[in-house]
Structure formats: C-alpha cells, structure tokens
Amino acid sequence: MRQLIKPWRHVFKLDPDRELGEAELALVCGSGTDAILVGGSTGVTYRNTQDLLHRLRPYGLPCALEVSDLAAAVPGFDLYMIPMVLNTADTAWVLGQHRKAIERYGSLIPWDLLLTEGYIVLNADSSVARLTGADCALNAEETAAYAQIADKLMQLPVVYLEYSGTFGDMETVRTVREVVECSQLFYGGGIKSETEAKQAAALCDTVVVGNIIYSDVQQGLATVEAVKNTVKLAVD
Ligand code: 1GP
Image (cartoon, rainbow, N blue to C red; front, side, top):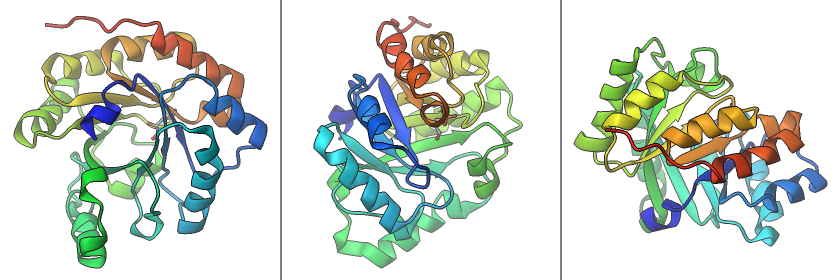
C-alpha cells in the first residue's frame, strides 16, 4: 500500500456528509488529482460513505477511506487510512477506537489494505481538534518531536499535518520536513489558492485539499496543477 500512495502529490478529500453535485464531482475527478480521500469528522455514516464511493467508482481514480467512525467502515475502497492522533491525551484516538475495531471486525479486516497515519492536529478551531481533544498549542519543535515519534519510533508510513480549515504555519511545516526521513509527509488544511498549494507542495510529499471544493470548485481545481508543478525543496 505504501507503493500505491508513494506517487500521490495531490489528493482531494471529500466529505460524505457534504453535498457535491454531479458536475462538480466530475470536475474534481477529471482534474488530474492523484487520488480521492473520503473522510470527515462528523456526520459520516455507512450510507453516505457507501453512496459517495458508488459515485466515485466510475471515474477510476484510487479511492481511500480515512476511517474515523467504525460504523462507516465501508468495504470496497482501494485503501483504508487509519489515523492515530499523536497530540491528544485521549487514548481513544490513539488506540481505543482501533482496539474496538479489531474486536468488532477481527478476521474481516483487510490488513493488507490498511495504512496508519501519524496524525498531528494543529488547528484548535476545527471539528477534528474538538472531537479528539488535541493539544494544538504546539511550537515547531514540539510538532517536529511528534513527527519523529511517528517517523522514527513508530515507523508509520504517513505523517499527516492536519490544519483542517486553516492554512498552516509553513515554518512549522518546514521544521517537520527537516526531521521526517521515511514517512510520507501529508499536509492538509485551508488551501484556497495556488500560492498556498505551492507553499505546501514545496515542503510536503502529498497535499490534501478539501473545503475549497465545496465553496469554489474552480479554485480547488487550480490547486492540482499548482501542486504538480512544484518541485519539493531539498531540506537538510
Ligand atoms: C481536512 O486536511 C484536510 O482533513 C484538508 O483541509 O478542508 O481545510 O482543505 P481543508
């Protein structure tokens, strides 16, 4: 599964709980993005996740489900991304939900389709931060320390800097970039312009774009080329 995500530079994240018309979905899927990540923090159900997967399938793009609610673990995705929130004291989001999932689904779990994301939640004013009780008051060094837990101690395939809803602090992202060696570095949060998309793409392996699709689809589409035309900076 690491091989599947390795070439991903740009990903659109679609929320099953939000409305997206057929025309907009066609534009998103025909945009040249590398994959669709399905996920959201609230209102995600089995039904709306399955519906969105059915609508996505004809376009032939890789579809990954970011599993945030056990009840919405729909079969049929190419990949399942499993967040472990590193900067929370609530162990439900590190291990608890995961233990329950294994107890509930056991041998039905397609282990070879799972990838774990070391999630670092950095926007205190976001649904995911509220839901998980994340400690978002981290400076760059503290954030980088969490990233190294994921990259070096836990050897997770993905480190995900999650600024959901707001554009992140690029100095923090750069500090993280400098220490992450093996994990694929994902950035998500608040990208509304090509300039922001390029800034994130210069520092991260994979750039995730979500909200803008729902408010200005054309602006969202423009982020694809912006990311793809950006060369990753060499950092020491
Ligand atoms: C959210 O990281 C993604 O989980 C993308 O963030 O919706 O703010 O673009 P935005």
